[in-house]
Image 1 (cartoon, rainbow, N blue to C red):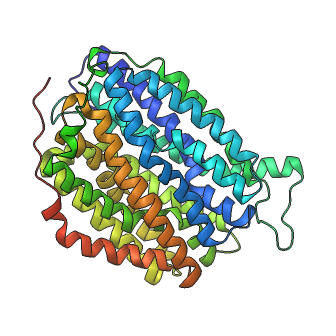
Image 2: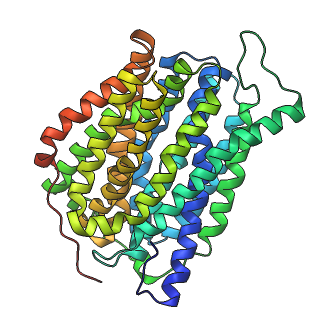
Length: 414
């Protein structure tokens, strides 16, 4: 449902921001579903090495995410920060294309992570700053276009990959990767993320996103007990749910070894179509039940999905049906959580707040701890083990979640 009651200028702003999120997630729609498979199959890494390589992204994110956020808040140059981040990502994708050794992979991953891990939180801060209209914000509708972009590239990339491999004469060999040309994902991502850079220049540089924080203002956040409790919650959520998602291609490989990419493509299609609808309507749901309950619903859906995969993933019907829960998880984790940050932090510290929350959740909880745990479980227990620990962990966390997440009230219109 499209939002109503907005001016012509707001429509223009929303159109540009929709294009920003669409191109941003279009690049991630290629990178995210297939990167761990590339490391496992094409670079021949072990499960634990894959977990460590992906964890490096988030280890670097511990330092750079709040740093980018505070730089944006102190200078007020939030648009220029996004331009630098997207350009750095494009160069990083090209560098990853040329990586052949594990040592080189770790070095390039460090440089790439300095930009990659901060794009979404800084995009969130910029978008929420421009669209923030108390509880009637239309952010969810704009964010839904990110899922559209992700769907198009995730579903279309295997088709492009088949064409590329046919043109280059690349065929599977015994004891080799099933998709020898999978590395083409990196220049494909680079081209798309450069489009994101271009779009950033068309975002209206309104006064609200040029607001500057006072020196030392970050201390407000690290002494706020409500915000600190919230950080504990997002750490635990990402710890139990992120590793199984990052390692999902390896899990699919274990149950569909003959058609891994084809299976992944259809599973992502099942996840993304309902996700687009769910995000578009999330604003209406949030205004009825509140951002807090929306987060808890996402946690429950994420846990149930991994329980179904871990116990019954070898049954095609259960595997495909469980993917429908992804849309609820995304609304809770990737939309409601940033909105909660927006409600908890002062307006001049939105970028810093989003950076800190992402650092604790995606980098520390999900990227480092969860990826390492998932990689260890794959090597020592089996490819379905991350899904099992994720599902059980989410259900246990749901019991204590109300004690960790404070009640939030939308701020008045500015």
